Length: 360
View 1: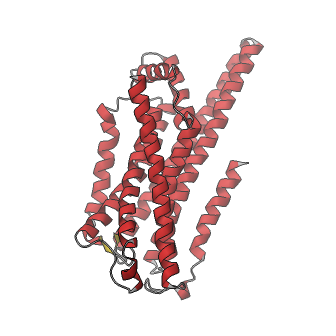
View 2: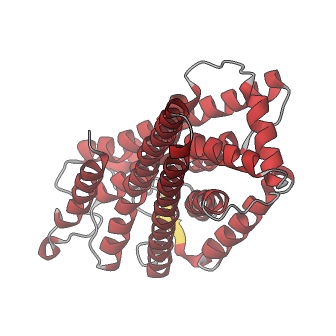
View 3: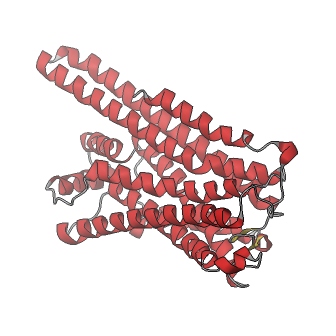
């Protein structure tokens, strides 16, 4: 399958949801074309299913990361720490929203009687705040990963990330806290769950800008990575003309294979981010235009889980479904450590290849 036309078709398909709700038929939240039982099942069964699946996937990554650390008795390389960090943010988000929806779903009789079914105050406000916070963690972490990979591969700039990679987490936590703390009065009870209030246009606007900026960042970084890989392949091809035919062919095939793998992974990451957050953009636009439909809310809450599910699938493709202790893990770790210390150019290039093929 050609991934570029496929990515374009998926994007158009997602954007088409914006035109499914005509402006002249925009309805308030309390009206629905479905009966109460059908609406209840749509609103709660779909998100709970997605969140449960996402949590199971994150637990799988936690378990595999623990095995890697415990049984190999060595540090975990950066290309394996990034999926672990993404799994942390996905777990926090899905756990919070699963509690959120499960509590509301447990009050089915109240829902059928049009009574309040959400968590009581102030727990509801705290829950809404937490969900926005954890989603911000995820969005900013995706952007940070793309920037760090761009610095290492394109700029060949290596730096120590500090103990427990605090240089990644510290700015993400600070920025993520600034966003929801600046809109403390925007969280509370809605018809179905605890979230941002319908009139909280500031949250919608800020989040819209944040997603657009991160999407532009990952596209910029990963396109530059692809260009760099292609340039290195061309340079290696011209240099290897003076070497033997066998080594030249092997080198060209190796770099060509890296380029193909990187292209697929880059498009996969961009596609996953689009699937996650383009519906959120559409939802925010609808909220700002006073267009409200509960199906859009269900879609938004569910599709954010696609990032965690995609992270698990990508992890299993790279590492396999079953854990296998490998001797080359230590060599990868040594290569990464040496390159970060700028000890040798060859080691840096080797580390670049490892990062590209494992984590781009």
